Length: 172
Image (cartoon, rainbow, N blue to C red; front, side, top):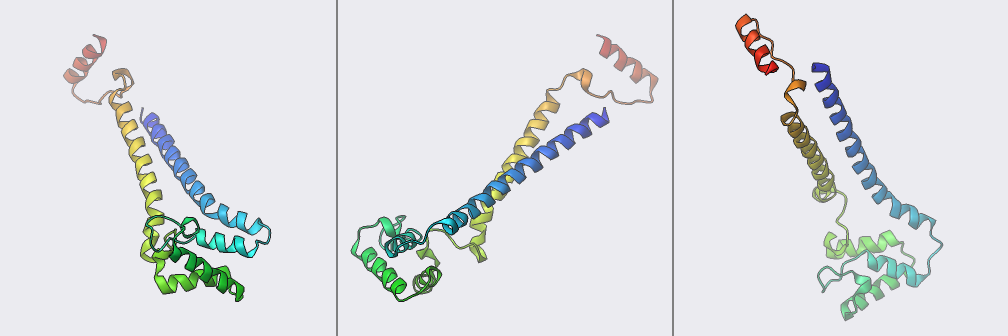
């Protein structure tokens, strides 16, 4: 019977590891996919570049709105600044760095994947792994608790009286 529980334990570990690898894989694909699609896109026009960069930034006056979709005068000024920097020959990364340096990392829609804010990116993975592990643990405990008595291993006893009593209980 010990080999059966080890087999169950091995299957549970395998399931947890498989689910964990799946979550990590989906997370990595989600991080890499936008870069692949941008790399394969044709050469954008200046308006497209301004719009794409504005999509990556927060509106300075409206909470939770991106710069590209905001009609305020401040956002128009920021988009004009993006356009003038791109016309001056700066790269997209240089334009974003200019705004991050001037207004801080909160100007970006996504938090940076470095420093203390790395927790924002890692926490969902850790939470998902913890929830999966807890779910497997609860399911195993429930299965063990609800298992029929016949499948449970009989306790080993050296006392002949206890062995006879256990045998009578099993037969009734």
